[in-house]
Image 1 (tube, rainbow, N blue to C red):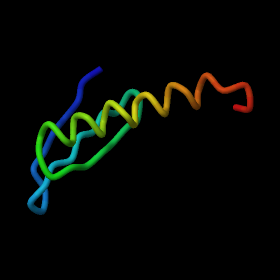
Image 2: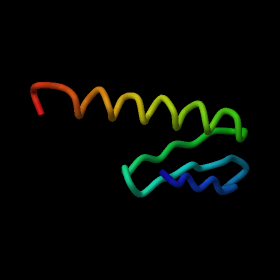
Image 3: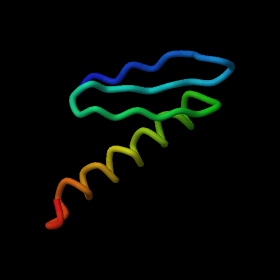
Length: 51
């Protein structure tokens, strides 16, 4: 997985295209924590029997 982190509007955005996940935060550590949380939620959702 390749994660791109960019500075935007006084904060940061982290994005990957495979899987399609994005997050934002005020600092680089914050955006990476938010990205990890978003990735965990995606993995839980994909593993859900309702999907």
